[in-house]
Length: 328
Image: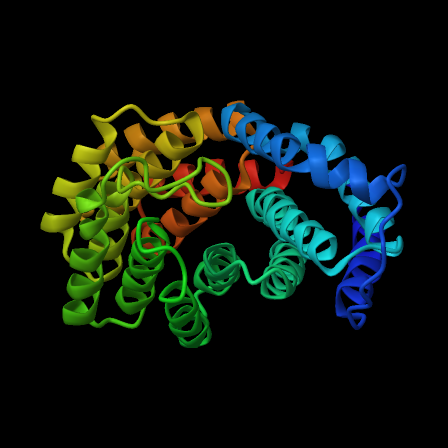
């Protein structure tokens, strides 16, 4: 990923979105007109490709090309309605770009993408998409263990989601992420309330998500409960939730993350044989997918191995995880 290239494009696109609206007649032969017509389906295709790819970074060149076209489209004269539709496409695709950076552990770049996505969604009056961009931004703080910084972002995301479509799962996804933040802050009751709120997604009729910028359908709640209970120091509840998650059909990336958390649970319980079993399985999937997300979960295992380093098995596991980070 050409980071400097992306940061330059971020600056240009951000400036174009911030310009005052001037209602002009768009050119029928311009880039903007074509993007307004074909952009939604192309963005949806890129999200599907991202979801199905074992290595998320392979999607980046296509996304980068489309982001460049969107910036060109914003430069053209256009009507206010056309500009709003372009901003919607920008808000959608910059969330996807942020996801790729996030998967590669490039959190600062991911946050910049999510910030621009939120601004574009605001301009488009797209409340659900706007709330999702804010929630993704909160994830950056969450994975850096800055729980106090994530909490107010999610509070705003929840308020924005309330203005969105009540038939979509947006507000319940916000609640699920809030549960992880409360768990990081050590608040068991608030975590439980947020998880219970997130479970209400199952009462929504039809399909409450679009498979792109909004993918929350409640199928991840078992693993999210496991993450929360592990953070709260409740190994009994964590094991039950994570084992349940592992029995479900998961992508390689998600399976690797669950295996890593089961390894952390084994280390927490000083069961090094069990921890080793799950670490090996997670390392294999991390190598197969190239996912920094799985690698990040494994890094958390090292922290729990620290009190056990006098045991050669713990030292060996620590070294294996460190070797993965070095290769990455």
